[in-house]
Length: 103
Image (tube, helix red, strand yellow):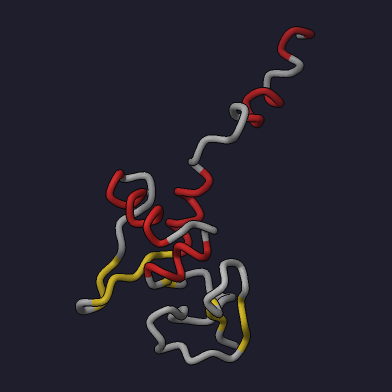
């Protein structure tokens, strides 16, 4: 089962050609999946321009190389996305320390 973006952010379709430049390189269920730059941007709900800027700034991971092809590891993208700051501060820290006054 192959998934790829249809060209609209967040719109994933089944049965696409996995060799297309905008598509995924492996089955979507696989843990070690690689995405082309455009698909990685769609995966993170970003424009390709913002995604490239974040890669240049070191916020998003650099791609892996398969011959001359640049491929982003989905696991690394997930980890980098999880490291982004939250709106209004980090809720996890506030929840973790919410009972600190009662100890």
